[in-house]
Length: 307
Image 1 (cartoon, one colour):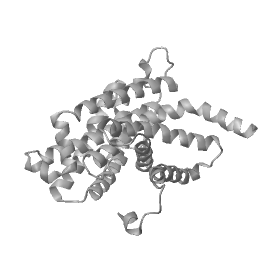
Image 2 (cartoon, rainbow, N blue to C red):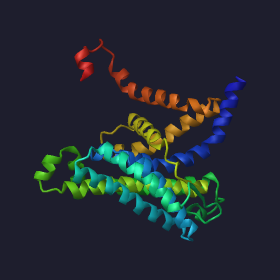
Image 3 (cartoon, rainbow, N blue to C red):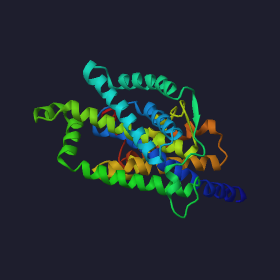
Image 4 (cartoon, rainbow, N blue to C red):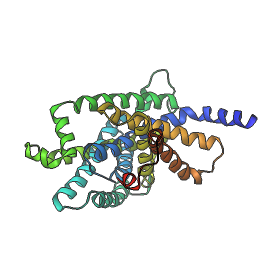
């Protein structure tokens, strides 16, 4: 009983920190979701756009730019990276995954070239988290407020956009590109714009993370894609993806739940090296839950399972 109480106490202590981190990283989960679900464009650029946004943000902060401007510059860099991935795919007929890998690989060298070294400290520079009233800068409360408000704003804006004519056209491109093109919709414009927007969100996450932790590193994106996919699947298993609202809410809900589960594992004393195993089990449980709920009758035939 004492052990359970200690685990619960440790978990509660970590909640503010992991909540702030999950809200910041929810933007990269959103950046992963948009190409996959909206455009049917499997993409790996987010793992390169995340550190790109962080490096550009760090350079901007070191140059004296305010925190909000550093995030806007990072978003522009991420949009450019995502747009380049989409252009490479469309112009040279390279598979989306390979185009994303190429861009991710090139961005590593670009980040090194931009900073001139593997990491850059911006500790002590003014950040976007400093302007929160009644919250001490650098503490989780300020980060939760800023990242939470940004998340709500992005959710509302995307929800409104996808209900407009242009938003419907983008969804049509991902659903049936041939039919969309027959209706006069520009496949190039919406694919480049949509993947670019996803890159901008991934870069925003990187910029917020740099302002949160006080430094940028060219290796800060390693593993973010896997964690983001796990969070996305967990979010979709919880809230579903049948409507626009549910699909847009899944990255934020999934990121919060995923990192709280990680926090619970750490509070229970799980070694950090076993977190990937725990991630796999979490995702497996979330994906299997709907199937288990439906499987009340006899086991389906082998052919049905394959389908």
